[in-house]
Image: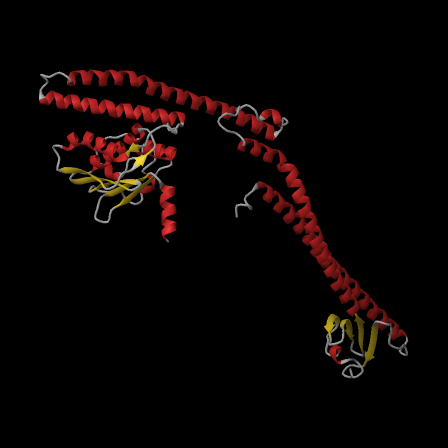
Amino acid sequence: MKYRRRLRSRLILSFVLFGTLLSVLFAVAAILLQSWLEDALIARTLADEVDQYISDLRVDPTLVEPFYSRIQGYVTRPGRPDIVPEPFRDLPSGVHSVRTSAAHFKAAVAKEDDFWVFLTYDVSENRELARRLLFGLIATVVFFSLLSLALGVWSAGRIMAPVTSLARRLERFDEASDPATLEQHFPDDEVGQLAAALDDYAARLRELVERDKAFNADVSHELRTPLAVISGATELMLSQPDLSERNRERLLRIARAARQSTDITSALLHLVRAERGTNGDQPAQDAGQIAEQVVDNYRPLISERELELVLEKLDTVSVIAPDSVIAVVFGNLIGNAVRYTASGEVRVQVRRGEVRILDTGPGIPEDELPHVFDRHFRGRQTGGSKGSGLGLSIVRRLCALYGWELDFANRPEGGLAVTVFFFPDRERTSKRTAR
């Protein structure tokens, strides 16, 4: 079906249909015209012959019946048609088509009060010629259909060549390509105008993307300085020996928030630059340790709620990625679970090759699951909570950048299960091997 929808195939199909339809119409018209002319000519000839014979017979009663190689004539008295062949005896006056086991005939009949005249004409040879004409016209239709196909393929190739060339040049575009390079390869026609429009659109799009990247990079970079100042001032204040426990807890929350903000700006920089931020010398990060830090950041937020935040380190998971990126992924997922779970527990499990976040919240309606990663999407279960709807979109982009996979599923006992697969290809290979 995809091939049929291509413009080239549509042009070819149009040529074939047009050529075939035109040939069929011509063939049908030729057959109908030939049949009509033949029947009319024979009928008129027979009728004229009968009329002429009757006129001659009235003048000369001794006149014998006409005889030709393909025409037979019979004259008899009314009620005595013994000399007339059986298929013609009961025919009324007029011209008729008669078919016998041996041949086809046209019969002209004139039944007068004093005598009956029958004139028959063997049209078997005419029928054979008509049959051969039909086969010839069918062969002509097939020939012209194939010719139309050939012309369609050739014409479609000629017509689509500039469009195909434009498509191939577009396929070769990458981030380093100069967007204003298409128009110069095409003449000033419709395709050339399309190429010019694409050049203009590509230039505007690149300018917009570059401006957006520069803005995000500048904002992320500039945020590092005030965050560093906040972190430094917080550490300095925490080092004072006479600090009260209440103030110490507040300063620790500020320090954790500054650390989280620093991780977010670092992760956003990786997204803006489309860099994985990894190299052969970078050590692997302990996902369980980072998960523990994120869980500790959220514990003070649920101290006054009937909610338990549990961390289970069932296996050691080492991931080669910046710790800031891992922290942002865990922070968004755990933060959502804590935000939408009014009571019960949020359990974080660090297992082989993956991290799961299980909650006892309301879950997500099945019809909304495919949209959880859409920007600014907030489902019906969010209630009156505030949020921009960007967190999961950022998480998805980070996971796509590092080749991780995310899975959202409602738990049978209630709540939501979110799983981060750090090595999805390895998991698939191991499952195939196990089978």
